[in-house]
Length: 275
Image (cartoon, rainbow, N blue to C red; front, side):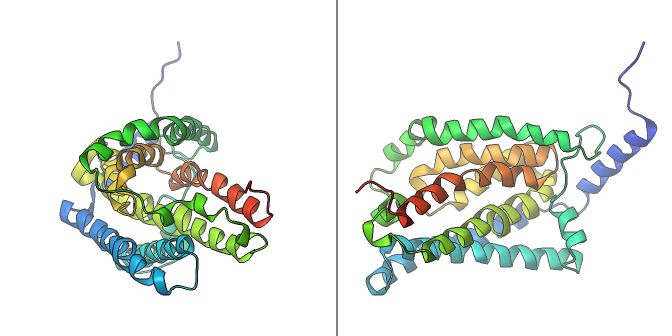
């Protein structure tokens, strides 16, 4: 009768992986320090810089806000690169991809790569869509009750860009593409699930992915009225990344959110949005 027993080599690989993960884990203060290093500049950009420059900006207020967000995410990329270089002493792709889990999903038991594990992005994708489309308003209702004076400025609503004057403005597509690159790969994902998540186990243990999602949620100071729904969505990125030690899974789930925005912007440029 067959038994489900790991081979000695697989057990050794699993032990080596566990031991390696315990080495050089971040302390709580290091984790909070990295959070502050990116969250506070983003707060400054959104709540101080943007309102100050909108009256003088040549761009529509929503575009000015969008460009400021891109600057904040680009700063995350810089911070991530500096951290990686200080840790590894190199920026070689082979070293970066291993350190930041930019690798094929690994079997949690054997630590062996298995492309079939990519199918595990489907449940988080569906749950993330459920949060965005159905549950978001319910989750954020307590925030509206606790912070009745905090409302989203009109320029933060991307739907405000559905204006006739943007028809034929193809440069807007470039803004979208740059924003998506930093949002779903080089900026947020690279720092939060590539740099931070692999180093949070020492403080938070098996709940490191939950702590990562909460910190990632509080980083979104540009929209505190959506705090709880943002955290719920972030759980859908951090869980598969941690479970299968593959940042590509978080990138896929998070990156799926760019598709509606891309479709909307293309519709605006092509003049297909209803007036």
